[in-house]
Image 1 (tube, one colour):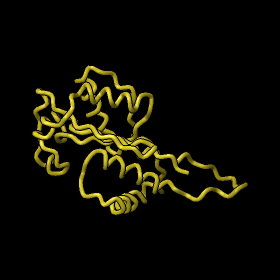
Image 2: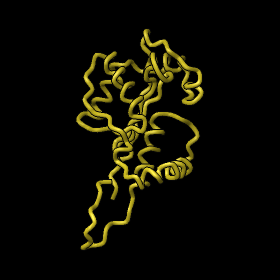
Image 3: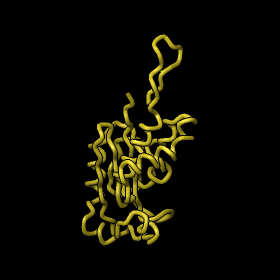
Length: 176
């Protein structure tokens, strides 16, 4: 049986200098998802309309419905303390989560690692087809953090599911 990893996904105000996290989604191994909209701090002013076109979250929505950065940081720590969360956009997601924790004056109690590090070359080769299949099965029509995390997690499971080695075989079983 494949145990799904914890998967984290971050939506942001844009890319590059001045961008900041606006939504964090987490898919847990027991198939629960968590989503946190983040209220921008006054100094978080960068806004890229093309990023908004992708995730569909307006700055006005964040101001009205987003949660304070310290609350989001505390909830992420409560949820993920001592765990490793995996990301398909490790370079971006780690910097946005680090900014969240820095500006919340909190210490991050979990690690983020690249999802691709869990995959063999063969699994990586089948990733895009498996992801498209998962998206079709889920009827994905929007680009939001918790749904993206769930799609990534289910794609991982789909890519890593293999028949068990026959009894007595000399092959080693991988942990996915």
